[in-house]
Length: 284
Ligand code: PAF
Image 1 (spheres, protein in one colour):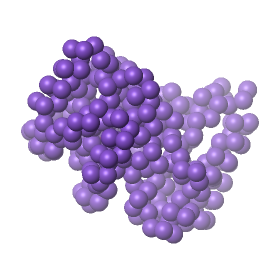
Image 2 (cartoon, rainbow, N blue to C red):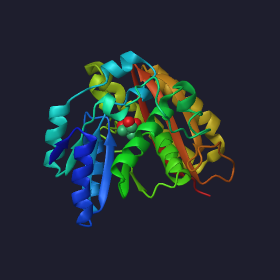
Image 3 (tube, rainbow, N blue to C red):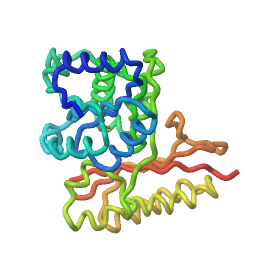
């Protein structure tokens, strides 16, 4: 496994692979590698591709500098895990490598509307930062395939839109959320939970799952279900930040004829914001 920090080096290595007709895949991450990331890597390797993992904690997608500063960093352990999973290249650029004009003066990539709703309405520049860094990585690496988890579902929808609208010749492959045995979705932020918070964190998923099971049979009770789930979550110590039931394709409000629906939610547990979602196919 090659660990690469400079763009020149990265381009040279990729050229050698491409000259040998290899298919290149990219798994963009912000590090603190967990089973969710490794599932993306496994999928890329199963598809017989040269797997490049980028590790870059992207400052422009954080609204608060303390959130950026506190983001867990574990480069050595990350590289060990990636090596065990036969990753070919780990790209670990610096901020000045990715933002040569600086982070207060950068050229951005922005997907309108979708970046402003839901999560985007609370975290003003978040998706602008995400699409900018992902497009920079796409430009530098020009992968054939790029892998994203479905945990940040809005991010996935936005990236697919960017790829479509900007004519990137890249196939976006997504995989369902990888969960701990308890049901808690893997997240780099889980390591920031206290022991007591960690003990109840999985209930977030269990309550959403219960909601999904009921919704599947009766889409008309959505308002009721949102209220019940909110009360259940708040009773055990979560603060519900958002809880939506939306059409999963365009993240628009559901109608009586909706079939593919998604429950999207973010909650606070102490100082940590958890995110989760469940796709629901409505029985008609
Ligand atoms: O999902 C993430 O980890 C990040 O938003 C991404 C896609 C690596 C961009 O920084």
